[in-house]
Length: 450
Image (tube, rainbow, N blue to C red; front, side, top):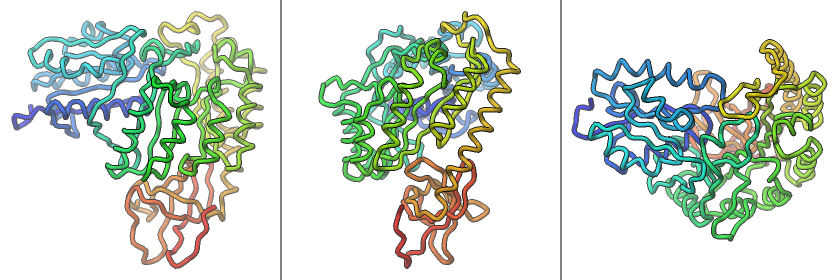
């Protein structure tokens, strides 16, 4: 137990950026209730485990971790499981891990204060919702962990029901925040000293303003116009709702980063239909064409799944040919993994694990070659770079460009180290398949940002 009368908590988080931002909001809610956040399970009275169910064997990993935590029960600590596995497994968590006191899905986080009262009185607390919930989780205080970027969830849940995905069952239906609340939070982020904002949603561009004032594209532009904001990012977009207006906004508002993450999942229209992705290869490539015809050079990244049930070798080759055609700046690649309650779970013609592994290796090798060539074109350019951390042992500082490319750089002799979160001009001197290397331009030099 903590040494003073103020109760303490620790949050361990797995999964996507939305999960990490949810943990920031949970922490804010706890602090507003008088709790103090600590940096280790040993110092905490209440241990939160924020879970993700997107990958295979996620439940097993959760219960293994809860078994690890059990040794701390004798110290009087309490345990809470939140997030997607919590919503998916529900009260079965109490059966398999009796030392857990609280189980809550993401749609129930706004009821955390009353659940904390329950467990303080020795009762178990459960916050589970069906997918028809209309609640969104907003808190007046968000414990922002990222030192240079503020996250804003503008839409929660998912209505897409892709055949492989468990998210609609764990996060509930799509529900959007008002544009006024989003813009107000953006202004608060600037007041806190941050200059970069990232808008979040399972399908961020499915946003529908309850006030009817803004589309996703117009809200994106308005956030970019908030005084003090230098960069605006957004993730993750769904191709079905990706419009020309989004590209136009990126062209017209300089603070909008020239980077779009647009998951394709497969290059085969037949596989896309089996996945219930609601677009074809041709429609996806049409959206790519919109971005490639923009005035700004927009970096495009994507998600790809290999080995979906029934995927033939020829259909896998279609994915490779799409990668060649688009020339993605980066990919997140995965082997298909069966998830509970999803239609793909009962599909025939499952791909053997060794074949999925082979296809993933071929895919990643192809992408490495694509990036090896595309990153090379930045050598010699001067790029505005946000400083993301302190100087490393080899003398480089970690940075990131507007196109979301890591750019590690050295300083000119005698130059002071720029603070984290500041923006500096960096001339690119070398390129690797996944990052760039450069040197910050001397103050005395008139460097023109590319």
